[in-house]
Amino acid sequence: MSRYVMKTDDGKELHYGFDMPLQEYFMQVFDDNGDPTENMDTRSEIFQFLDETGYKLPQNHIMALALDVPF
Image 1 (spheres, rainbow, N blue to C red):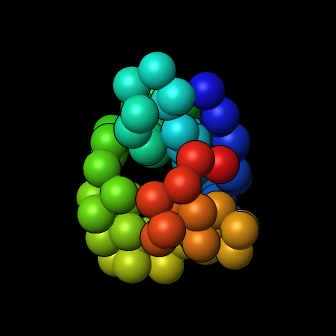
Image 2 (cartoon, rainbow, N blue to C red; image 1 turned 90 degrees about the vertical axis):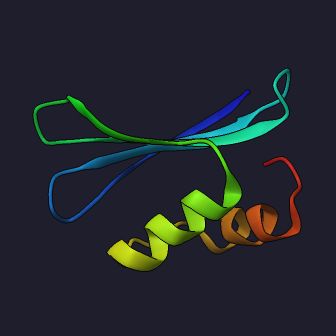
């Protein structure tokens, strides 16, 4: 499983990656207290969330997600 953590300017943390055994992507959002606020497990949910919030993942992760390849 790949797992990446990105801190946002507004104090949140995005934990995201690809779970090889389950063959699915995931993203979890944690608030500034470390409490989970959102869970996403499909590419469309992740892209919609990124579009709505304006958060930017590294370009190579966006491309892998768009092409449906593990990263």
